[in-house]
Image 1 (cartoon, one colour):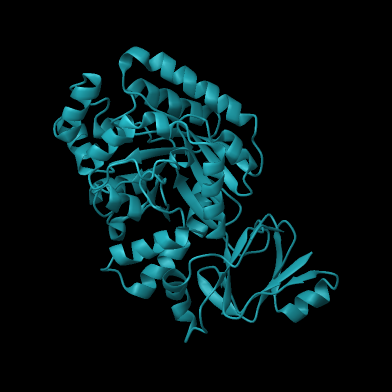
Image 2: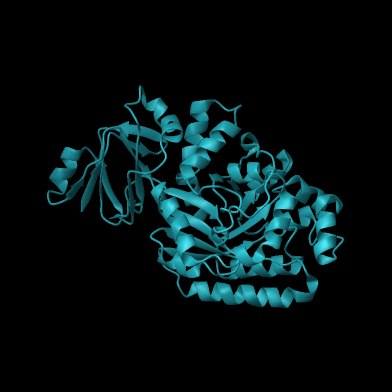
Length: 402
């Protein structure tokens, strides 16, 4: 048994002081340090620096590890030119080595991320994701809009996902990702959804990331028209917007971005039990606009996306960007919301027994040390986002990794 003490603990959306946590692989008891030492006299005591906060381990629901090697090769500022630069650099994006992806996992770990959703397009990140200390929900992605090679694309997807299912454990959970409405043929969409349903797997999909995507899906025009005609000889989208969304009606799905979704569409997603990942830095770098989180009723996570559209996988930095982006929401209210968007909410979205400091939850925790004693408990969430960068300690399943 272990006992972790700090000046503050984040419990059920509030900060409490003068408490400590007894844990092994799970959180067992929360009480004062003195009472816990009476209950567990042989426990190992873990102290923390002054002004430290114990949080549930942070969760990053959406990251592309396979795109960790091309930070300086792509074109930023607008979505379609960026996508063109991705295609032009396919050889580099598809040959990211293990050491680069391991460094990406380490960067996440040092910022307090104890679980993440990895979007795997090629399967080259499988070894890294099965060996990293964090819990991984491994989204095998299906993509391909060419009707002539639907069977080839599905066979590739099926081989990859069946291989990943062999590694299923408490730390590695296979899942399914449909890339997007503009890039995935409707037959592949339906087959991937069926596979997820039949195997009771989590499902994810990019949706309405850019204005160009919306224009293409609703009017078959705009930048995507020129893009698809040039690269693939295609003059109409693989799906219409509403056909694509409706295909997911019977299975809760984690939709990524949704920047260009209307309020009515956001309400539709919430009504069907879907959730949304918000990636503020990626959206800014690709010129996609701002997700109106004030209109989002569905469960909302904050995620980093990949290093092809971000300069860092540090989740605290991502919260700082969101804090600045959503300037109309009161600062302290937004700070608490954002903390929940990387703890309890994504744990529920991904079906993980973590994300909260509570008895019976997995002992996935991180310690964040503030630069000074906060003037009130109300300030801690804001100070965490503004004034910290890395975790002081990180535990996963009760084992310390930082």
